[in-house]
Amino acid sequence: QVQLVESGGGLVQAGGSLRLSCTASGRTFGINTLAWFRQSPRKERDFVAAVSGIGTTWYGDSVKGRFTISRDNAKNTMYLQMDSLEPEDTAVYYCAANPRHNIYGPQYVYWGQGTQVTVSS
Image (cartoon, rainbow, N blue to C red; front, top):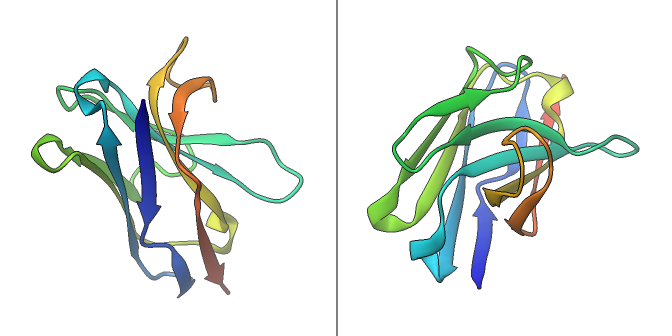
């Protein structure tokens, strides 16, 4: 089993920045691709970004050029640097590990509990 714990969420004004972290524990040697998803009330869980074990990255269209995903395998930690935040970025952000099918869909083996990000206008 793998446990994922997110941190770094909070309240920020539009145009500001936040950095989220996701730390893995347990059978971490089995982790390959890590990803961030987000979910707003009454909406589906949407893909934000993903990073492979060798550092290849993918981004959702709405965050390209504003968010940067990275990982430190030695620390078993993934990061999401979020810049130029907009009120539309307000959501609960979840980290996930090991996609069951493709990286863009919310079918991952492991999930964190989520961290709230609120962007005020």
